[in-house]
Image (cartoon, rainbow, N blue to C red; front, side, top):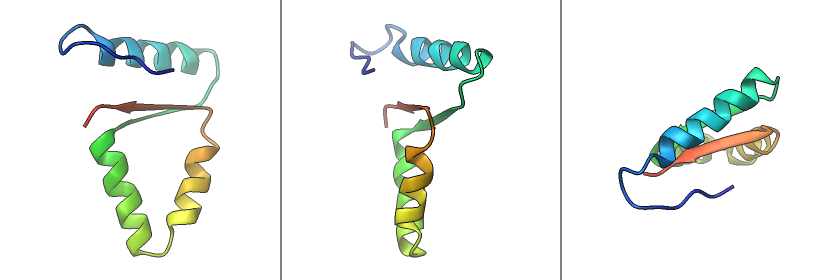
Length: 68
């Protein structure tokens, strides 16, 4: 799902709420900002663990990425 809108209308809040509801139903979720995710992937690439990190992320049923 992609949530798009102007600044301050509650996109992040809505995404967090949906993630929280999913987790209450037993669905694993990962919350990350775009900048955190980029830094994590860059660090993994520097340590030759990029493919492994992508594989780990691809197994998360719900990945919520907030804007940078």
